[in-house]
Length: 171
Image (cartoon, rainbow, N blue to C red; front, side):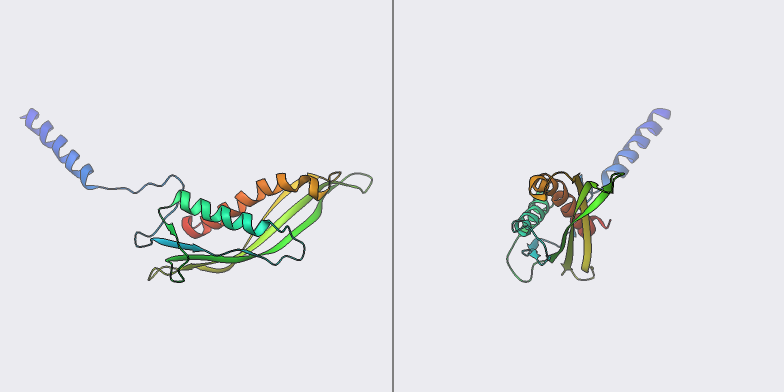
């Protein structure tokens, strides 16, 4: 009797687990099953002070992240399921720390984006005019030109992660 009970319990457990499905994502992205396409528009640079290559860098990094970490296909169609558009609104350098003789010891580069995420899947929401900002510090004895490539290599991926997470992971 216990042999049949054990066999029935194992069979029941196997059937119960087989009927369950769990969707895991390594990056935490939650993409609607109906969504197939994404349009990432060129992120315009409207910051008073700017780097001429920054728009291209941010736009391409966002496209690459979406294509690498989702099953979405990039399109140029106006009716894409998801659409990203935005502007760079801030690119500024400020003092982050001052020495005891009132000279800057550390400077900070801050980049600010304003992004709109359009979600055309019925019943789902996007976001409009969401501001994202990231900073990185550098030694004030350096010029911005000397430190800029290292700073952008740190700031741009973080900004792109913030936009991606806000759109697809609801962070």
